[in-house]
Image (cartoon, rainbow, N blue to C red):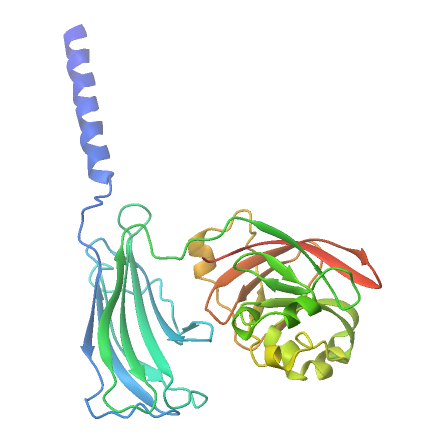
Length: 329
């Protein structure tokens, strides 16, 4: 009887080893592939205000987790193509996505604007999934400029890595602290410091802070403001006064567009993938904030980040805000 028990135990151990081995994901399994099955004819002009078709086929032997299509334009936040990203509805046992995409060329894109149509596929393979990207490039108004190029292949996902948590103090227009933040290095500037910057460095400031004095949001609200909005004079209608982007005219023309959204992500726990998947509208160029509020942003460089407001306190004749954030590197 004892001998039989030992034999049964050995069989159970062997079965467990086989089961666990079969469940282990193979890091050397084939990566997803992306093919452009059709592209515009060579003479296509890529004129603004038009659309063109782009055929795409994605295949992932380890099964698809997500397919995204993004329009990437320098100086603008990346824009997901309508109805993307897709996380279901794949065919052939969830290994294949195939479609003819209608790619819009925005009327606001002037001739010479370089555009990337980026297709991103992630599978369910090892290390949380592997990602491949492949892109179609074109130049607005330049006939025959379309071309296909592989962009990035890698394991473990392609989401940009995040900075460590940065804590800064920003002041409104009446506070003693500076109200201009450059998120890539955590530098806070006062108005006089902004005026001393050249246009290249001034353009890297991507978030400013102010307190409303009227307008559509009412008075006494603490607001994150896109530098471009702050420089445009259009903020007078929104906030009741023009805060300006520094006082030097050269810096007004170098200010950046930043867009905001509310989020449930916390800088302390947000993953690179979660931040990369944030959808942020290119219409919300200011955001009223409150203590413990969490907000997402994307800047001119397409870098996304997450902010948490830790406190709001009196400073000078105004208010200052302590906030922490992470941002894509």
